[in-house]
Image (cartoon, rainbow, N blue to C red; front, side):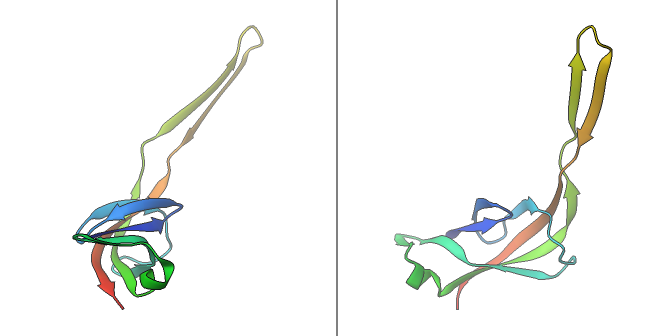
Length: 103
């Protein structure tokens, strides 16, 4: 059984015990997140209608915060002496999916 949920601005395919990185959320470690699925697949049965999806809920446990890879940005203009170096490191939250349940 798996579900597709909207988490952190993206759609993620999740099943029970999956660990994934989503955009940073402010919840504490050990707290539970609940998502409304966009699509649920249970064996041969595929649920996509909004009226039926209202009966499903995906829950996940917050494991902690992690950082993505460092991205270096370098701006340079020839013959003018202009150089600029910037960097960025995105913050994520790791979560473990604990259940895909019918309400």
